[in-house]
Image (tube, protein in one colour):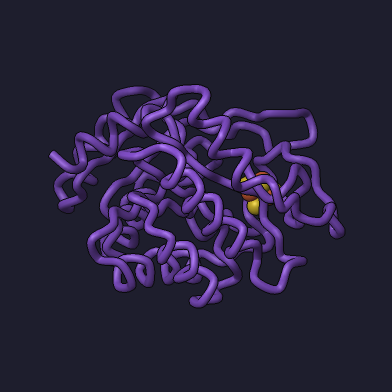
Length: 233
Ligand code: SF4
């Protein structure tokens, strides 16, 4: 996770510490991430970040640099980025995409009715537009998004979410059970049975996604290498 350890947003499900004035960026971070990934022998690297609404470019140049450094350090590596919405700034989204990550992931996280509690500073249609723009800007790259279930959403709302992601030309979807990370975070409204996760996967696959990874333990980066391989296959 890059761009520091303090986030300018306050999502109800997330335990990352918040600050309106996070520390300045560490200019050595892109090279350090690449060096560490190389030292760990990684062949598939997922780069994510906190939100940095305080920065004019949302941290997009730092993101792009990190992708380029990892590609340069590890020939043949696959890089997946899990990005913020960059407040819908297309130049920032394009900057990250032009660094040539293999997978562009941006999570919608939940259904629009629950955004006020779950992602109060985000906007569901804007996140869909970010995903749709990513596919139009770099059609050869895979796009990916995901949501947490068990926050109070209905079956029909999840079906609509899947149709929305399909309309945004998303290739890969992840669905997993929300778990409350700390006392101050949102409570779990429901534990979804594995059979319902399977039904969501089947419904999603019937819509034509390349891959729908759906199960209680699924997270957006869980088994990302294998999910990527299956999506390509
Ligand atoms: S933007 Fe990301 S890191 Fe920040 S609070 Fe929301 S989920 Fe957590």
